[in-house]
Image (cartoon, rainbow, N blue to C red):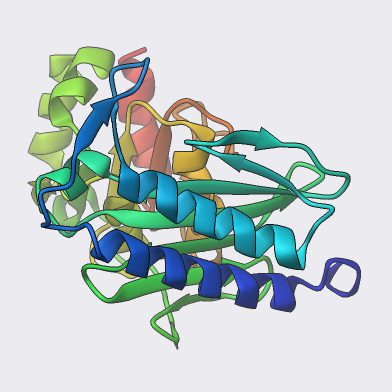
Length: 259
């Protein structure tokens, strides 16, 4: 598959595209950027649109036969695999001047997630992975932690209030009681913390494909697991759990009891 799809070249282009898009977002970050509300009520800014447009231009120039799906620009059809863009994951953090937002880019072919890139431009952090070739954090190999007990685990979530609403307050209380530390270092950054061994669990009660895009490749190549709450390893789920692998089944059992 590598030879046919030239994954290394695609990865290099993806990294560059995310880096350039990150620079675009930084020009608007903490700069009183105007905010609009989309039809679904979620916020969007000119930074989102310009960053996605730049990524699309780069991808189209290098891979004109590929499909491109973006959160802001929708689907451009193609004959080959599909790129998936979230130009700013964590727009609410972005517009508040909080640096935990990310530029996300993924590539899938025949339903298999093959490439994932996460750029946190305001933090100077980037993670990337391609199937079978490991996960890297600013150029060095990234690995999940080896923590094997919930009592020593650090739990992340984008929104604990939403988690309580979806899974139930009893489930949330059980997760809090059984884990060592709980923080809302959320959106893509929570998943990045798991992939780099700085946290063990990240739970998201609501996800879209552009949120999930790079996470499966990155978490698995770092030695962890990324699934839906039903245990399916996919980027097309509506919710997500990322763990270091050792704790995945324990977390799943708690969430299953709530459903």
